Length: 411
Image (cartoon, rainbow, N blue to C red; front, side):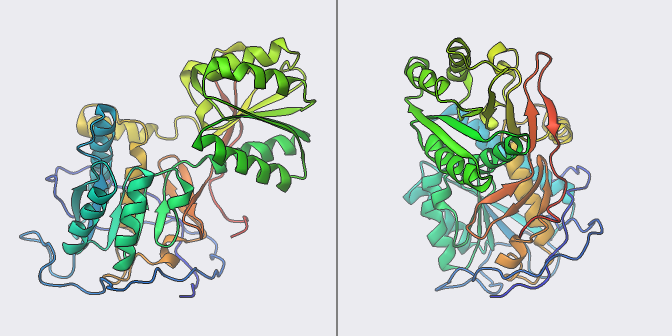
């Protein structure tokens, strides 16, 4: 279908209300004034062999719900995962989704949950269960293989999937990734380096799926700023294996080095580069969101390095309200579920079973989330407004603020 002028940027506002776990909400209707959105052509809607296009008597409805068709929202998360940390994240994401629903405060949206399990057939069956109950949008799953299993089931019914995986390969054709993708982080920091005079780039990348994605993004980003790649070194993701590649990069003549690694391995790489003559007075180190770690702030070899991440304390208000509501801090990444449900609330005012269209989801103005603005691309990935931060002895400082609008950017 072709798109027309799309919705304005959203703001997530509201107050917490005491409502039961299975609740209904409505869209947050307050929106700031904005310049007219550009006219864009949306990609075709996913082909649905058996579309959910109208309310049916067998679909789930709560007693006492308002007249009309409720906005049925399915949530798929790994509630029964064998990993305690994963179960804790799933539980926290569900609470964050409930908080977003409470904040919207309208009784017309119905939340339904199903277990992602270990992915594959179990995740697909979860999607079938929710679709049989009338879900017209699915939030989740968390992991790439689960998204790959859920997406075709949802696509058969014409239902979009707002997932949290970082695996770009599972995006598109009705599946939208709301996660923090390394591609956007690499592009942001390379462009900032280029704007500050850097031309010769090298990269140290782990031999992992994350490193593969960062590698492709690095090549594209350097080409887009007309820079030169003088070296790319890959390493097994452990400190000992990174030493040789780091020494090689130190001799490459680069004036900017991307290190798509965090934690203890990054702590080992920095001193190795310095010892081999690549001190911060000669070369600027560049990082991804993996650098956004309080444990790295006092690493002397990283001082002066730049990395792309959400603005510091961008999620402070969300964290405070979550703690007030549930008596504990949210697990990291829970804010993604809040953003997903807030987006659902915003779009829920459209006509039943025709509200979550590609044109609506890919508003070129984007949406305002917990960690800043974001919008979906035609391939199902997301673009985020990120800040560039610099490592200092007193903690990271913002050297390039996160944008607050996509106005003026190519759509």
